[in-house]
Image (cartoon, rainbow, N blue to C red; front, side):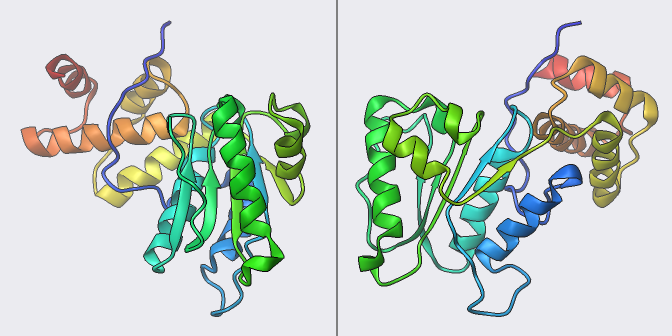
Length: 232
């Protein structure tokens, strides 16, 4: 059965609090310390960190959550992903640099990523800057220039695991309860069997379904879900 991936905007941006860690608890706790969340002021530990794993394991969610957490603290953060055709030069005002989907970087993007990394960790900067990156492969297997590939493996490396079906169901139930809506087992079965099963896509589907149910003043059912898709 063909699975569908929906291009739907999240109702709220990714946060560390909204990340259901499951088997990835160590990575989540590390990033909380990385941004200083839940820790005394001045205890932030922005050591170079690299996350890797399959699509849907939560890499981009965590990177965007870290970017948002630092921005909320008033920090300026550099962001680079494979869609950025003309990366900016390193900015001395940045507190950290965040680089997503590094396995897809072009030659020019690799050159800029290396420049960002070197400038961020330079002792001459006079301030601790963080480097957080993510890709689909462990550092040693990345199809990148040697100097960038080796540096991405310098610090902490975490492999993110996909959530199993029981965990995905638990997350869907938790998110539905937080919205005050009832998500029946039959609707959950339909969502898991007919759509992309990665958690990010499921959360986006739930966001859209909740909004559509509120707009139409109807309970969330399979007919409602089908009607929503037909209205797109």
